[in-house]
Image (cartoon, rainbow, N blue to C red; front, side, top):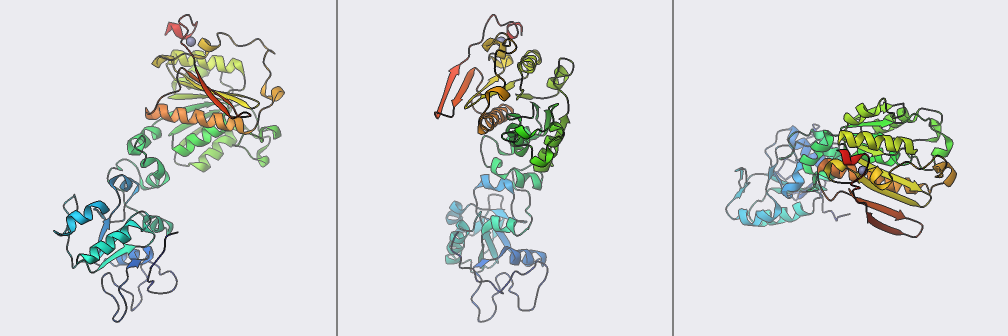
Length: 402
Ligand SMILES: [Zn+2]
């Protein structure tokens, strides 16, 4: 909480577009009243609605502007004010602000803009105000922003939704647009698919298909966080699509209420950029592997067993091994205990599924170091994380042919 020296003109919150006699104008204090220093967003909105003369200066860094600016704002970062002020204020875009003009400065939270206001007032800008609470308070008050420079191609709603992505250099507007243009096939809406799909939807992956032919069962709820108690008995794929759409209605979610098979698998994989393998059986896992190798589509693999989990990326088309390089054949039936028999700590698929989502996002962005060729092994009971190399098997029956 930052200290406030706000001098509110009136008790209560004034509504924009609702002027009353005696309301302050920008740079025009009431006789006998001290001039406002920090002003409330709703008061500024009213000034704008009344088209009062007001020069608005955004003093944030350039990278922060992408998530939106106040309507009509010009950009002069705080650090540049001192250099520009002695000659009159001019933005990089050539907008010039005179000393006698009413000025509003703002930043993210209202701290830097208060410094800017003090500096400007000391340098002859007598009618300078700072936006109390900054752009955060502006947005919280339900006021809209204009598109910031560099935000081309993203709409205001997207700029707000993905604001925390846009200031990461590895994502930014360019990366967010890549995610929005990408598609992921999530095979299995279970313990792994649930967190993976939730994070992919939240991240703004433009199209997600979730394939599962099961219904929600009571024993799923200990770890399959897409589902709630009142959804027991319903189709997992359909419930998942509903939940994911509620989280992010701006992307496309397709529910496939079927098993991925040899008959439908190839086309499904071909229609998506990345596959998340959250299948609960070896037959499906090997089928996905073989088809994805042929289609040159990366498969982000994850598996869990009690307190342990594993994750990697199978991407032979870009130089890594495939599942059959690690395990040439599925284990004989009955050889491995299933999740139901062995049990699993509920958070374990949460950890691994989230790592799968992160690897898929990195792949779509083309950023970072892929876990291709590396198997991450997590033993959460002992708090041990380790990574081993998985070599490409030159004699692999599947990927050596491609
Ligand atoms: Zn292979």
